Structures are given as structure tokens and as C-alpha cells.
Length: 342
Image (tube, rainbow, N blue to C red; front, side, top):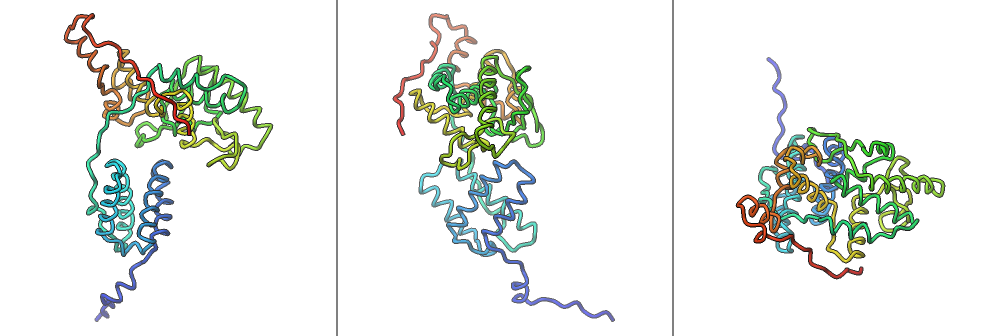
């Protein structure tokens, strides 16, 4: 008769189960996840999890309870965090615990973590007027910062691309003769991993000038990233090294400081992207055109960019209802604001 296989008591089983500190578990999870999704998503989830780890003082992941999670989420709500910011935290925690549940760690069931409903806000939309003020606020001199910033902002405006897509461009990706480039699409979900972007002759002239200045900078100091189209020039803030690829944070700062100098509300890359989607529709384009040009993974995403509100919607309504021209909604003027100095 075959011998019985030994069985573990509940106490022995508890000691046999794998244990891992939260900090080490986050590193392992991030290393695995970066193979699957974009680097931006990995970094965002990594930051969310590390803050939660700090809040719990780096416990073993097996000891984290639903009560710990709920206390943390409720504290975020009490401190005034927006609902969409809390959603990011819940999604990161769900993915984290799902990863370790699949490996048979005795951790919290991710299905128990509640996710708030997404809060939809009317998007900020840039205008031709704000763009002109923004680009004209940057001096047309020979300073490398100014040459780079004018080219970068013009490229964002003309292409409607995400700032992460623009900073990922290499110099070799740019075809100045045809005014086009192949770009790696963020948030493609595998449906549109690469797409082509285009720009106007005016932006092409700015890019040519930057490429010439970039070549000159290459002789003055060592580039950390030899291929990057847009690079840091001075040692400051996050740029401890010159010649490093510009980050999305750097783009946001360039837009913020330029907006302050122009005396307008802060223009971000996404507000330019929304303008592009709206402009395509206003000129007779379809949601499919918006999706193809902006690189959306689905037509549903394009619907958000083409949603009309306020004066634009009023004018469209007047046109369809045959309201006499002299009684139609007039073009909206952007209110003047004072520049912020910081």
C-alpha cells in the first residue's frame, strides 16, 4: 500500500507561505509590468504604490487588509483629492494584488477594492489666439532654449500629439523634406502602435533651426541621449545632466512658464490636442478622421474630443435651427488675465 503523503498543519502552512515586504513587492511588480504596458503607466503606478507603502510603513504584503485600503482612500477623499485621482490609486492597487494573487500569495482579494465612477469634466481647449500669444512670448533670438521651445510648442500644436509622444521622438524619426515622422502611439492598446504625424511649413522652419542648433550643441557638451530630438540644455531641476532627453515634466514647465510670460491661463499639451480634434470636426472631418490623426484606440475616445459646449455648441444649434445670422451667437472672446510670476 502506498504511503500517505504528508500534510501540513495550519501553523506549518502559514510559515511555509511566501512572505514579501511591500517595497520589494512593488519593485518586482513594476519590473514585470514594464514589459506589458507603456513606461508612463508603470511610473505612475509605481509612485502610487510607493506612497501607499510609506503610509503603511512597508509591511509584508500578506498583512495588508481591506481596512487599510479603505482608510487610505477615505483619507484621500477627506484631504480633497479629486475622484479621478482616487481612481488611479484603486486601479494600481487592484493590478498589484491581482499580480500576487495569481502567484498564490495570501494577499487581499483585488475584487474587494472599490473603484469610484469616473468624473467627466469639460475639457480645457486651446484656441488659435492663445497659441499665437504663447509662441510669440518666446523671443526670436539665437538662445538654444528659445529655439528649442518654439519648435517643440509648434510641433505639439500642429500634430495634436501627446507630450509623451513628442518627447519620445528621435532626430532620425524626423523627415524635414516631407514634413512627417513616424511616432510611437501612447495608449494604443495594441491597435495603433505606430502612426504618422505631419506639420506645417512654418513649424518645419522652426524644426530646421532647432536641428541646426542641436548639431552645434553636440560639439559643446556630451549628450546623454544621442538620438533624442529634444534635449535638456542647462543643469537645473530634474536635469542634472545636459543633453538628456526632455521629459513630459519639462514640457509641462515650458508651457507653464511660457503661458505666464504671455499673460494667459496655462496652456497644456492636451488642450492643444482637444483643439485639433475640435478643428477637424468644424472643418467637416469625421470621428474616424479624429481617431486616425490623433491616434485613438477607439472611436469612443474621439467622441470626447469632439464634444461641443458653450458658444461653439450654441452656434451649431443656431445654424441647424435656421436662426437668422444677425441673431446668432457671436464668436466668444477669451477674457484677459494677469500673468503669474513665480
